[in-house]
Image (cartoon, rainbow, N blue to C red; front, side):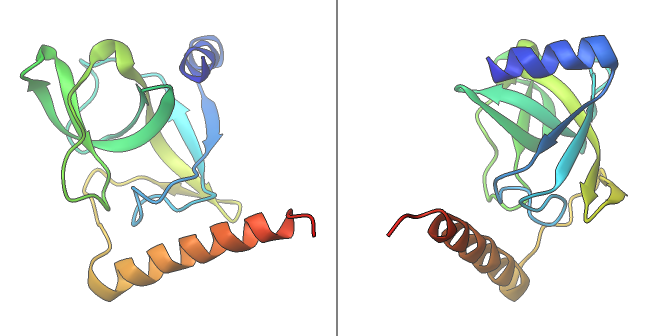
Length: 144
């Protein structure tokens, strides 16, 4: 349902904005960033693009690592910058849009085609900070 809504907004207005929640794209996208999406077709997409895909009732923003997979030429492989392995192949109809830029602290930042995943200590610190934010966010709304 969310995928259909975002697709409709993209078709009607040419742009959609969503808030990022996960940590799979740390380095390019941080939790809380606003993703600025534009409509994209598989023929316009290229490896290195960050795209929004529909996956099992969820929306994922991951980077394209390959176009044309065992599912056929009209499919693609994506992978989160902070993940070690690619996602399972997806078909063209699961492709929703391309993330062109993110808004962080009211500043628009273009999303690079070349991944710059955090490694080592930097990755651990970013993941730990994201986990701490999630825990403190939930405690704020907890009733005692």
